[in-house]
Image 1: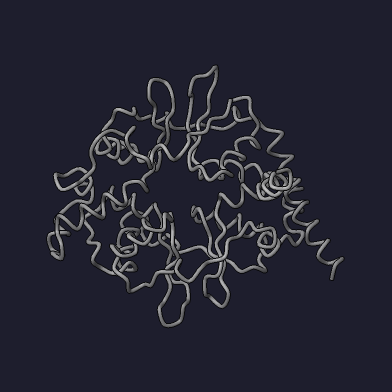
Image 2 (image 1 turned 90 degrees about the vertical axis):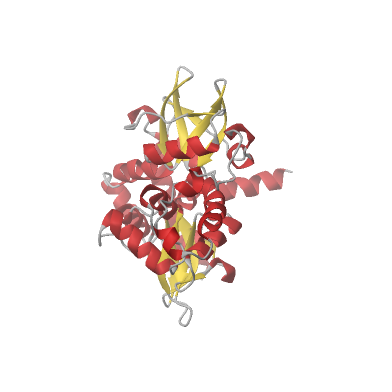
Length: 343
């Protein structure tokens, strides 16, 4: 058994070493930064800043104060304000909710959002990290391993672009799947169980689950209270995974939203995703511990999701997100353990 465990560890290390070589051999300047950077001034009111996120169709943007980045405004920051205003506007009046566009909950008179972005602790709590165009892709992966959803790219101390975690994942996997040797290493039995043993897959607590028949408003309140960007939706009787909700659903609601949050979360998600994606969107992304890392990367790449759920007999027991993948690549947990040992 000891020899088998050592072989398993070697498989994981082989995959990680191969990815590291590829990422250290490429520079950030080789990435295609398609969109002009969206930067929001710290003196902007939260209401106007949220409008900018929606109009520019971005999930997050850096906030600057006199050429100094003070934090990041994320679409998730809007959730608490939206829930509060939603309840004030319509109470239990479902018809009134249907007649109100979602963005009005954040920009109307009933919204409690005031002041400036520089006054919001949720903005200042998220650091805006930057890398130089001459830095390696491995260095940018290290930034996203910190849990950042957006990072800046600078040249001659000037911001020339912004890249999201999802965009970087796509760029990296495009490179990885172009390497025949990498594919061979990945096929070499690197299982998700190995990543779990290395603590790169988190177990799910019972209070992390929400039920398909819960109201959408209650589910989003759970996300806000727990500070989660996504929760698994299960059937109450069987405990089996049936859907996934995420911060992207909030963005869709704000962009398109005349949907009521008084309907079940399952109905809400089906309606809002069908409006945006038709019937082509997978309801969720899941695998089992015996599946390979290759399959996990392939599923995340194909679906566009930022996380997949680990299931046992169709019941969610763990979660593996893009942040976890980047942490695995840069040996995030091992470095933390080394730092503890040095103290």
